[in-house]
Length: 136
Image (cartoon, rainbow, N blue to C red):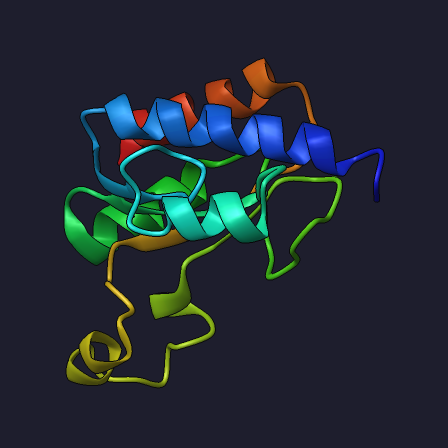
């Protein structure tokens, strides 16, 4: 794990920076980004970075689900720090039993996608995201 985490963190930062600039992404939550509300805490408690990030796909729940379906490299799974990039759409998986009002009260946006970025070549990860976003 100590050999993999630097690559996880570098890839996650690249994914967050890519997503932050993409026109089909509404928002990015990644504490490694300057300006993120948790950036100062991340610098204190996770100075080497993190592999996890959240993003919101513009277009709501359907757009997020379409984006997820378009991913080929990333696995749809709940793992964190797996060597492979894993993504999850909480509104249709882990929180699927909740109504829209309950999701909102729990802070789970319908267009939220969670990423645990793996150690694959970062260009392959970004190409997968770009291709999936084309269809979203």
